[in-house]
Length: 79
Image 1 (tube, rainbow, N blue to C red):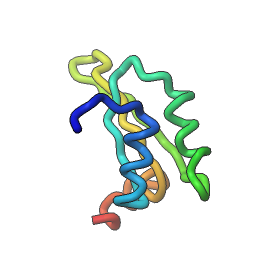
Image 2: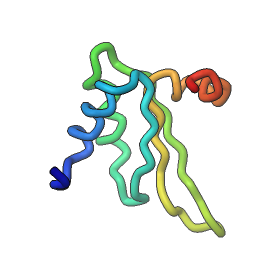
Image 3: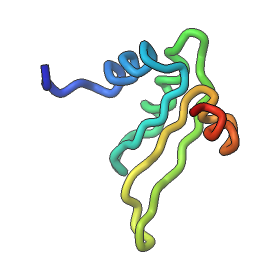
């Protein structure tokens, strides 16, 4: 049950639960592959990402899909 899953499998599972998805990813993640997840959705989802820094060092990447990607104010409306 706790077997490692690839990003696509995790994304598909998240889509079954919620239409808007936020993923915190390792800093080494290939962003073109993450963006591809939005194209593979039906219908395609909006996508945006941001780099997360602590003490001027990149620690991770946050990827927003669906309405979560449209604007910061949209995040407060998702709750």
